[in-house]
Image 1 (cartoon, helix red, strand yellow):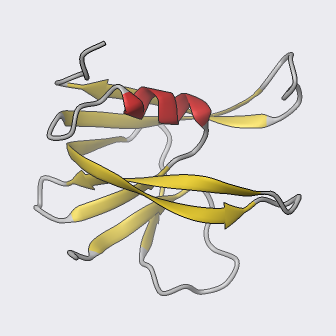
Image 2: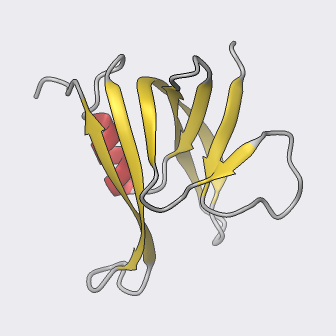
Length: 120
C-alpha cells in the first residue's frame, strides 16, 4: 500500500505520533483527485466506538494526503463525490450548533467542490 505523505488535522497531536501531519488552514483550499477512503474504529471521549473515515486525495505533486472525516456533513458531501473526481476542499472554520440534539456543540465547516458527482 502506498504511504500517505501527511494527514490533515484540526489540532496538533497531544503526543508525537508516527504519521506526519499538516493543520487545516482556514480558507486555504486542498486540491487534487479523490481516490478512495478507508475506515478505522475509534473511541469517542465518552467511550463509544464508531467508524471514522479518512479520505485520500492525490495531490498535484503526485503524493497522497489524508483528510479525516470531520463530521456527518463533510461525510455526506464526500459520499456524493465520485472516485477519480477532481476536488477542491476548503476548511471554513468552526461554528456552534444553535438548536437540536447537538445544540452547543462546535462543528467544523467545509466546502467540497467536485468535478464528478455520483449518480442519484
